[in-house]
Length: 184
Ligand SMILES: CC(C)(COP(=O)(O)OP(=O)(O)OC[C@H]1O[C@@H](n2cnc3c(N)ncnc32)[C@H](O)[C@@H]1OP(=O)(O)O)[C@@H](O)C(=O)NCCC(=O)NCCS
Image (cartoon, rainbow, N blue to C red; front, top):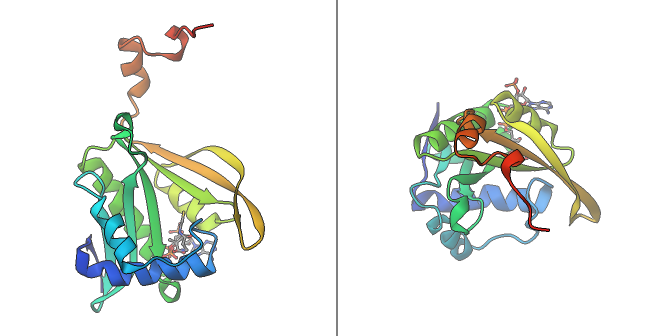
């Protein structure tokens, strides 16, 4: 049975193994060098109450993980976070990625995030499909921003906004794009 829940520091070696496998073999992450446990500890500690890390566990083995990391350290971005999602190679295609992402999306809402964003390397149709099916919209493409395994790569941006009444709120507050006067 697969159990999904919040990650603890004890899960870090399992999380790191899965991430390092993806670094070395896939275009899913634009990291190119494997992470040490010490680096991963720093990463883990940067995730406060608003930035959950979750794991999927089967028979006490970590088979997948996902996180909502800070989109930016700048304070005004505090209600935005970025998705990471990884399933151990031999466990892919068993529905674990979907369960992790469903849980993560719920968590993001629970902790009060306003929006969550995914950066997906070109060609990752499974990830695009998965995000789309959970309410993410394709909002753009950053052309040729990555280079890995000798290839230039586009990155697709997908976004989910939890509270779709944003436009109505902005109008009330006079923040709609139409009302913004740009300095010449
Ligand atoms: C992307 C990833 C997280 C998906 O997790 P997974 O456990 O393999 O995926 P699931 O089994 O939950 O399947 C997710 C969906 O993709 C579909 N899918 C799975 N394998 C597929 C394939 N080879 N081709 C097309 N669709 C596929 C499934 O049918 C499912 O859709 P459905 O629920 O509508 O039927 C996982 O493959 C992975 O870790 N890949 C490497 C890292 C990565 O790409 N991370 C995402 C970075 S943005």
